[in-house]
Every structure is written in C-alpha cells, then in structure tokens.
Amino acid sequence: MKIVSLFSGCGGLDLGFIKAGFEVIWANEYDRTIWETYEKNHRETVLDRRSICDIPSDEIPEADGIIGGPPCQSWSEAGAMRGINDHRGKLFFEFIRILKDKQPKFFLAENVSGILLARHKEAVENIIQEFEKAGYKVKIKLLNAHDYGVPQDRKRVFFVGLRRDINTEFIFPEASPKKKYLKKAIGDLPEAISSQNNKAVANLDVSNHEYMTGGFSTIYMSRNRVRAWDEPSFTIQAGGRHAPLHPKAPKMKFIEQNKRIFVPGKENLYRRLSLRECARVQTFPDDFVFYYSSLADGYKMVGNAVPVQLAYAMARSVMDSLKTAKTENVSRQKKNPISEYSLQPA
Image (cartoon, rainbow, N blue to C red; front, side, top):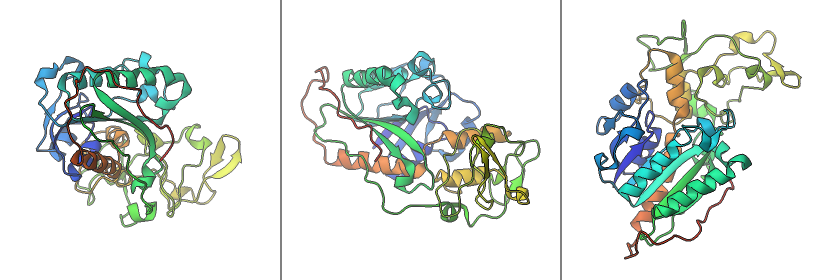
C-alpha cells in the first residue's frame, strides 16, 4: 500500500510503516536542517521541501493513506500550551485540508500527550469534528511507547481514521508483554565521544555516538535525570541539553524540593546520552545515520521522531484492519456519527 507522509521530520514514523509493508511514495518536510538526513535514509521517497501551506493538494500523489505528526510544540506540556491559537497548532488543519481533498483509505496523526489537557478540550473536539466532516471514522488514544517494545517512557496521542465507506473497525495494537530496558538498548555500545563546542565529530567508529557537553540548568537539576540499566529511559526530548543522563551514573541525590545534585565523588560519571544512544532508545537502527553540523540539530531530529517500533506497531494494526475491510457504496458526504475514542493509556 502506498502512503504519503506529512510533517515527516527525519522519518521515524515513515520507517515504522515501511517495516510493516507500506511504501512511502512522497513526503513533506520544511525544516532545512532535516533534509539531508531524510533523503539519505529514505532514498526511494520523493521529499517535497516546501511549506505545507504552499502545496496544492493536486500536487500530492494519490495514496492509500496519509500519515504524519503535525508540529506539537504548541500542545506540549513543556511549551506555552497555546494550542490551536498558535500558528503551529493551526497546521493540524493543513493536514485535514489535504485529507479532505485526497480521500485516502486511512490517516494517522501523532501528537504529544499535552493535547489532552483540559484547556485544549474544545480544540481537540473541533479537530475530531473536522476529521469526521472529511469523511472518516475517528479513534484517538494515548499510548506509552514502552508498551510496544521501546525502551523509553514516552506517552503520545494517536488519531486514526478509516474512510467511512470502508466497512471495518480500527483496533489499536495490544501492549507487548515483553519490555525493553536500557541495558539491552545501549549496553553494547562503547564509550561515547565528548563533542567540542557541540559540533559534529568527524570519523566516529559508531555513527552519531557523540554527546553534548556544557552545564546543567537549575530546571534540569530539579529532578533526577538518571534511569538505571534495568529501567526504561526517560522521554527523549528534542533538545540536547535536556537529554537523559547515562545509566552508568548513580541516581541524583535529593537535597530539597526541586533541587538535586550529582553524587559527590561520582561527578565524572554524569554525562548526557549520546545522539546514537538516544536514537537507540527511539529504536532507530544503527544504519540510520543522522546528518548535522550542530549537535543541537541532531538531538532535535531524534527527539521529535516517533519511535520506530511504536510506529511499526501502529502500522501493523492499520494494515490488519485494511486487509479485512470491505468498501461499501456509502456517500462520503454523509454526516458521520460521533467518533468513538478513548483517552486512557493502553
């Protein structure tokens, strides 16, 4: 099945769908710092570099599905939480605009858990109604990537819609009984290289196995940032300065509310996860190489991606649903009943 990818980033979501048997024929990404990474790792996909706002729907190829992660900064609990009033939040409607015009069999959109905060309830309901008016039966669910073979606690929201004339129900993937932890994810890697001035290091034995240096903010030091070898990682964020610390270090010592320190005498053990370690935690394969001159751009690419294994689990569920589907002769203009959706973690 052929799919189109919007707001593609470096292509974690795309890679999961490819692993499940889909073919990504066209993708769109506006951030120039990502272009080289996407194009060198997805050589079979046409990458359109324009802003999605400037791309007419008739210039996008026909496909069986549309996937993507519209920018989430405005929905994030760590951000300003402006939601739909932020121009990046409004990009969700560009996704819907293309969906209405192209009418693929399905769509999948991913976003941060902050979109489910009470202050965004009206905006989320509006988005669901727009998906329905576009002709889709919509489901929405909050998933933790750790339940699907990802060595990381990472909660994300997925909107999935099947076109109304397709007579089947989408079922979210069941959580895997097997959990993956840091030891298995990164325990075999050699010691990472410290980056000077946080620039890319040339001729690394393991691609991207370098880490950001520099001080730690009071916000960073307000919480423990170390997970042990037998635990899942904290969420990999889009900023290198907030990358989790390597599990070789002991957990940070509590001093008082919102204040922790590195264990005295062990300070040399505390370093941020390398970019390759973050990529491993995001379940990217080692042959997926990230291209950048500034480490900040590399961490941003990795942190913004959908974990490949989580994307694969979702893609398999979409594929299974479509294999059992029958297309009915139903008008796509018919009003869809209220969407069925759950806001509970899987």
